[in-house]
Length: 304
Image (cartoon, rainbow, N blue to C red; front, side):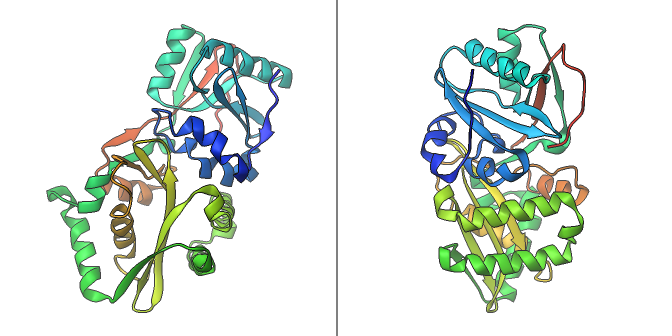
């Protein structure tokens, strides 16, 4: 029987000892995401048989992640399936990349049903591409950045504890403009963002603030997902300042350490404008993510 515990900022060293060594680049494995969204998903974890095991809840149904680590994977999966049986619920895992699905199918042929949702695919870019905006396809992005430089007196500074209130003020302005409190999705995002900012150092986050002509124009933050991929979890800008999004993206990309070949800028959630914007930056990978349910389980589509 697995003994799960609530995930807390103090668990970062233990959890990241698994995730940072993983080959998987999906944003769901970011410690900040796991911790900041625990209010929404009741996220819990355990370590067993050399694996990190994750459990959360979606629409009153338990959901699991693919075990991360090294050891007897079948034993770890059996433990998770037994936990689902104890809950009296179907066994499903979410956030699986294609290689995870292949491993699962190889280990338990024909026993799982796999479904993907394009709205939850991650957009992964070459860090060097975002930092240089080189090439014909990214010429419009270079134009936005160059125009911003010509138009504004600007500064970029790291997010530090004394600047968190400033970020929250801009987020409140953004939220008012986008009717956050009237939409469950953006309301949840607001709560997760506030948690991350208030626990910025504990979660191991890195970020920056862009000022234009003496006022805050944008901020962004993220953290490593694994040894070659850095996750950008939040990016907010004052939409009345033309080019602010392009500029904060460019500035932050230039400060992500070169050890990170890739930058994961997360999903578009099926939002048309967001999908168009993410595609316009020419992702190197659009990482499909799957739900895997035992075939004996009833089909019940869920949204994270």
